[in-house]
Image (cartoon, rainbow over all chains, first blue to last red; front, top):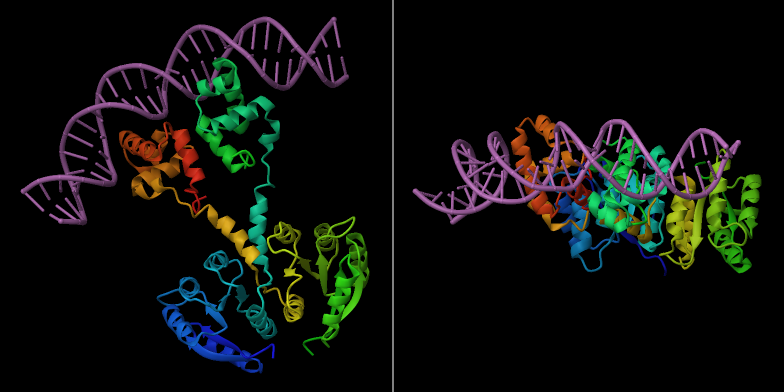
Length: 220
Length: 220
DNA sequence: ACCCTTCTCCCCCGCGCGGCGGAGGCGGAT
DNA sequence: ATCCGCCTCCGCCGCGCGGGGGAGAAGGGT
């Protein structure tokens, strides 16, 4: 028997939502809703007692939110259940928080009943999951640093680039001169050029521009 | 009828893998493997012709890799299929690349047949998906900036924090004074305190420290 | 009561910084 | 041969910046 009954706990402060979820899951013979909770704190204790396979956790709940409840469940139990976080909006900042808390999945309330059931089965059985558009956006944000190169970056000369990087290292003009093996006056010229091209009025603003432009990526 | 047959295309350079996948999917009445491809280029043309609902795409393939094939499929077709990337190792750098390319899912070859089937159904039916440990790691990397909070951050007073943020905005002491509604001398005091606590010797280094500490997160 | 922290403001001083204009050499483009 | 961009260096000047030291008021902790 590879598939014993999957035991599910529902955590949502709205009774209607719980009822709806229960109705959907009850139609599946291999799924069983063993408990419910209306608050985050309640969810933690219910899960601790009933030891379900999967928890459907609402994010917005009184007292203790779904994220914190998830943290506690995954942090304190030995063989914690898989937690699927349920929310309304995909662009929610909760997506990120849910990931951090260790949730195995992320589900929209507008999801079809079909998808809900599939998702529960999937998280219960496997550590090989999938990701939503929001997570993709997260990766995009990761990649965004590489894209969106401000126009002034390309117009910097080699020397000016070196100077800007050293400026971003917190060095004074004199130190930069020593590091580059040139005169202090030369550095001042380069700095002036950098300020002009970046539109900065002092070295601090130039360094800020460098950071915002991701100009320091790959040198650290 | 909410579930017409889900049409699947397999792309993998190893015939054995394709056979195995086909066997698994053939056992399900609602899934139909309509085509196969042994290279990335072949995958693109096959998908273009057959218009499947889901593509199971291997990452490592001759000539054109699965990632690039995914990019082309999702970039050039009007109503592209969902692409599930299949690989052997979870810690693969491909996870990230797959996300970037726009894949809807990520699947391990060692996944149980059960999980594979569930995953295919899930991606075919919904835009509400789930994520694996590797993606969680991606988010962690994202969070890493927020974690590792340098000790000096907590020791900043409220006022000093405000000043540091304005410094990081490129403002001069005078401007900060105006913005905060206090005297210039007061700002100098706060700035001095910030420099002492951050270990910076000038405002530029302080701003650098603020960036490195992720101190500007959430204020943009 | 006392102390400690925080926020507020003041003085003076030295200096690095940035703006200004100028100049010489060197390489590539035409 | 000419021009232009880049790198190199020079002076002068004003000012914002940072160091040093001090001081008063408000609030909380003991």
